[in-house]
Length: 340
Image (cartoon, rainbow, N blue to C red):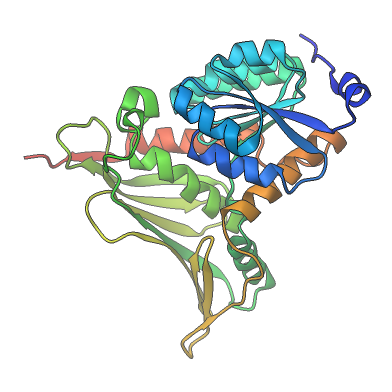
């Protein structure tokens, strides 16, 4: 199947640049919409969302054409690309449909619930010749970029290990119910936040995961997804990493500590960065922090990949590799069901 070429038609009709349609208009879509406004050459023109009130709110804030059915939007609008921000179990179906209609795709993480679904998405995008980028945003946070520069400089010696801790009350009533069902979300806290941890660790180390071990478990009797985990990774570069999650009623933490032979980095992604070389922690000034700047950098990269064939570091193969690691965690880490 050949990609449907729409660029020439669009430029002739309006000269407004790449036209984007959103599939899903939840909270993260507002972040994407604000990011697009910062990128010259991108125009958000339409959004599809099954919840009418959510769709109305999105349209009022971002002034777009609206649809209940994303397939109708794809068929009715003249689009170059779509951003898909749907529940995880709908990623495969929507991405394949858009690829078959010649649209480039920015797909929210995780790529899909299983490696098998990821492979179907990859097949469809390759057959259509469209760009697929997965929203693994860790490489775009300025705090993470600054940390990587310190790692690569060698000023702290050799990186030997990483501890990544994410504690959050995962089972709050405000969380959409589909997040708390394995069939729709693909898993619990490990699926939802594990993709971020793996993406961050792989970006910082330029290395793939070689071995996985650990324990996952749950303490919430009304849900079939896990709420806590401790995972040990060994990377191909020799670095080891421990990922720790607690999704119960605990104080929130989002902290990554990197241990070197000559010092330590403490990283709070999106907010702060410290370095310790033996005399206490020194805070590193960061010019820009926060989600919107990171998402704007991501959209700029997506635009460059589509328009100029730039290197797509968050391509479908990378997204599938992360899901493969998540599957290994679920398949090979011991599951400790502590519910009494």
